[in-house]
Length: 199
Figure 1 (cartoon, rainbow, N blue to C red):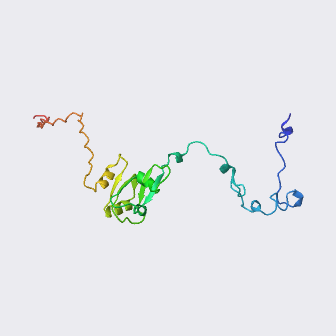
Figure 2 (figure 1 turned 30 degrees about the vertical axis):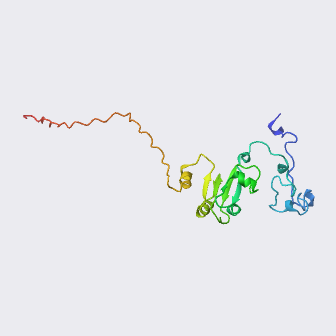
Figure 3 (figure 1 turned 90 degrees about the vertical axis):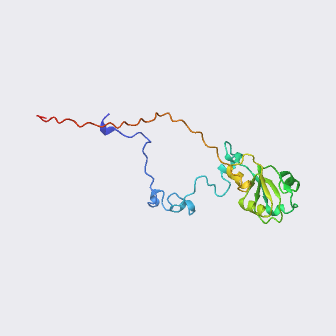
């Protein structure tokens, strides 16, 4: 075998596909792109997974695995307009709302929103209350009782009308392990005797 006898392996190299170089090239006129259509245009392409408008495979298959939607908390929403059906001074809780068909089904808690106006004072027991609903209930002479026992200091402040503030306990003072610095003794430095000859 000589250097001038070396040839590429059979099938590793093939003839270049000539596009748009006339009918004699075998790929003239439409250059292998067919007639018209989106994919025949310059720059025209279809995104991956698109199936012409029908439901794509990725959406037809069931989804499995971890999903944060399982931990989402759903709250039953009650507006102030709905609470006008109760008499003044009534304690509105979850049991009363269920009996009145204002809430139904399974939920993590009840949230009161400020839609509408409250005509008389009520005692509302809920898990969450919006700021506008809180103001309207207190303005009508009612009160709010949050069912969550683990209330933050800010929530307790609002519930008590800002009268009883909860102060965080002061942290205990730590002993300093470093030794106290000694006071430097003020010693008078004696001037050095001059070492000049004949002194």
